[in-house]
Length: 163
Length: 395
Image (cartoon, rainbow over all chains, first blue to last red; front, side, top):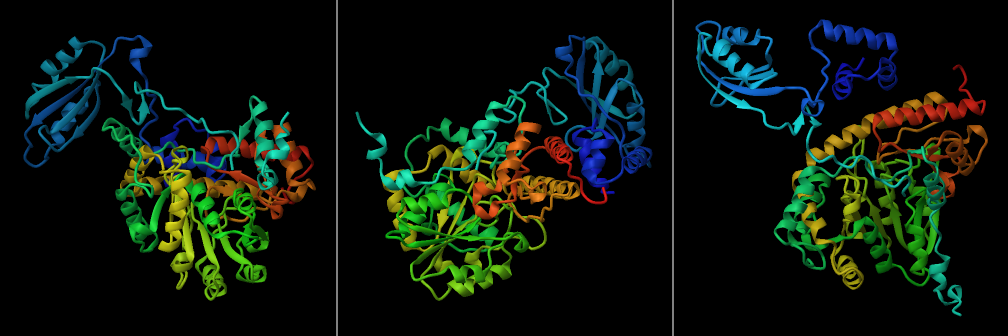
């Protein structure tokens, strides 16, 4: 089984059917199913996400990206702080980054108030957090490689047959 | 009342019309027809290239360029030829044309007159023969064969050469077969050509789309051949820029100079915006070429496997974005097969005969489509074969 290819295909289309995957990979459906399960069990495939444009769905939704300055802790580096931040359900993504902050924290919330409360009451008090910069997302143009608010590109306007 | 037939030049009237036209008109009438019939990439032109074009317009670069093309583009092309094909050309030995097509036209017009013979291995792209006849030359076709994986052989070329032979056209990687000449094939062909005055027109428009270990070798790389070869290449296939209409030719300066002279009279200069885009393409976009090549390679393997599994014998093509299955199992001609497939399954592919008589029994399938599209198309072909009572032995 070409695992890299299977991962590529699932990355491009998480909803690809096992039948189609088997057809492309030249494997049986059972083997593809088994390989998929194994990749999930090994934590290589961590989930299948739906990308939603909440603005269009008319649902209250606020996204924020918070830069967190933090000091490293003896022995465990940044992992201890990361554990503390990452366990909040409001945190959708958490990265340790180079640059002016140590962490980037992505928050999905319903209102700005919720974000403010999260920062003031949950994030800032964590031991080792030295400061935060909260950036509210104003508009999403592109998410995970998918176009949200860029002008759509023509899909296929080729002539049906050409030399 | 003017008799329009009577007043037109006989050579123009005698030009062979493209066999693809008829299919195009039929397929366009069928509303939910899907196609594997295109000769152009499905990818969008890489954004860096489009952005460079937009930027040039913002700066107001809207005037003619030098006839032979922008100096910086010719220099970038010389560097590109060196980097990608180990071919050293002075920028003055390279000029920019309106697509590879114009370069082909100019090369033939520069060389051919008075029933000079032009050797054209077929199946091949559709323009060589009509331009040869329009110029007053005589096309001498060679039919490549399935057992040779549609590679023209030195022996076939040797047999076709006469005192009147002026030009040999080598279009490999080949449209429609996907065949690529190996280095050894080129060495053998060079041995036949080297001591003659025959010029080789190497249409290498698909040179960047080559798959497998062997890679691509240009005939101009073979000893003693650069001085008798005009290399034609372009941006359409490698950079997915068909609509920009930009190509180029490289070769011995006296020949290139005469081609530029014709180009001055009939074209002036290639489109300026496209040329600025092309500078970005040849300078910055090697990684885009590779990304697209890998995607084509994946689809190529898929199509070859599926067609062979269905029982349509398909040799493994090493270049371009076409596969060329043998469709003779149903006992239909190429034309009938493609016509019936179009009518019954709403799937358009191009009969091999559109590219020369040895295309009989074959069809050109383009894989310049998404894998999902290819899957659906393969299902339709499989259904078509079943409906006609054909099933591969042992299946």
